[in-house]
Length: 211
Image 1 (spheres, rainbow, N blue to C red):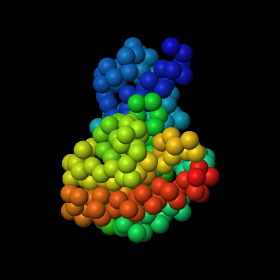
Image 2 (image 1 turned 120 degrees about the vertical axis):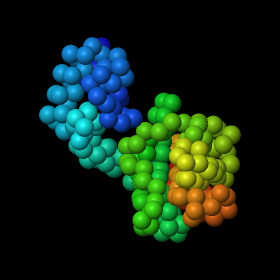
Image 3 (image 1 turned 180 degrees about the vertical axis):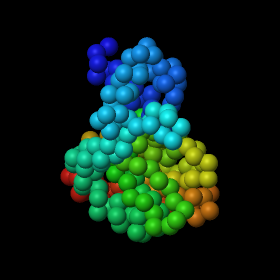
Image 4 (image 1 turned 60 degrees about the vertical axis):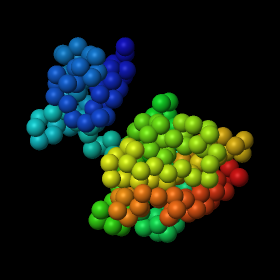
């Protein structure tokens, strides 16, 4: 592995949360001295930080880098008006995800105005197959439906509804979602938000020149 590969291994090991040096070594598979040296070097550049317990964690500079990367993606820019309309129409948080390997990555997100809300930061990497957006991106059969709903799949107490964004050939290129606490979305969130989410997906396709 080159130094960049090893640095990425350190960041990937911290993706699930802060780790002690021992935990970082176990998660990254790197020698202890190498893991420590790289983590400290990344800390200097703001890509890694120490939490209140002294553990290594992802640095705050990644937030601005992730935002800049997301804003550079044409689809994220094109989706902006549709996401704003969807958030205002539903009153819940909205997200746009794309598939990256066996994960889904949030490339755009707007938060609900409610104090109790779902927060998915831009750049968040989540598993496929869990949650409505993951299922849309992972399974073409799910993506063929007008919308897909999930209740408490990825996170207890949270429900979501997602719809596929397709290109001109009909392939699923993204998933637009609305998510919020079950006490507001109910256990049948599709009945409340399905039509709105599907309409947002179609608007994104038009704005991005996919339809």
